[in-house]
Length: 248
Ligand SMILES: C[S@@+](CC[C@H](N)C(=O)[O-])C[C@H]1O[C@@H](n2cnc3c(N)ncnc32)[C@H](O)[C@@H]1O
Image 1 (cartoon, protein in one colour):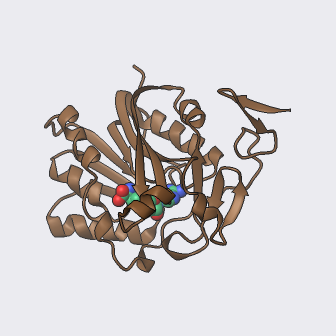
Image 2 (cartoon, helix red, strand yellow; image 1 turned 180 degrees about the vertical axis):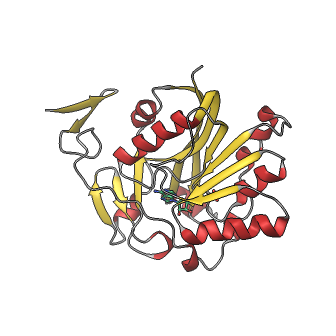
């Protein structure tokens, strides 16, 4: 037997289902290991375009969950919003604070786990979490999403990404720890010790069952260099990009 989620059966003792017996693994990126951070210094285009729906209103509260070195925190602070941010990594928090200071901007940045949010219920108009919430076992993703739901105002939006199950197979070959069919812990580099959860579309619908899904986009990130060989070999990442809203 097993547990069925949207037509897919998960074994009872699996992290993919809801029995959730494995110990939680949450660990920050080791940003000090990353030689070239330039790819993380320019805000993502679709994240930037969220300001068109938010408008120019200094009352708006934005939360950058897993802020990294701060590209979106700084961007939203520059729009005049009230910005809050957090990351489990001490270096990430430090870098974000330094960038804000250098830019003459302010935001409330703290170190913390995505599963335990310090903010009160119904606080934020927008939560952005770009390439963050899949760095966990399934049960912690579920917990994180329930925390985001709690801190969003009714009608507030959550923009973020999840890894897709149909990509990333090369990470099974690299001496990484295979936790289960959908979860791999990377064993080297900037992501050493960090889990990656690969979602089926059924998982996405299950994760967001309490939200209204505004848009769900499939986005490929192929390995560099961007040439036909790499595209055809399908090595790289696939992400779901989601924009969802807390129901009013
Ligand atoms: C791929 S980086 C993305 C950073 C940022 N969102 C951006 O788009 O530039 C992932 C970030 O998530 C953070 N992170 C990983 N696991 C976390 C957790 N359990 N709680 C909070 N932050 C976490 C990492 O430390 C890292 O800074």
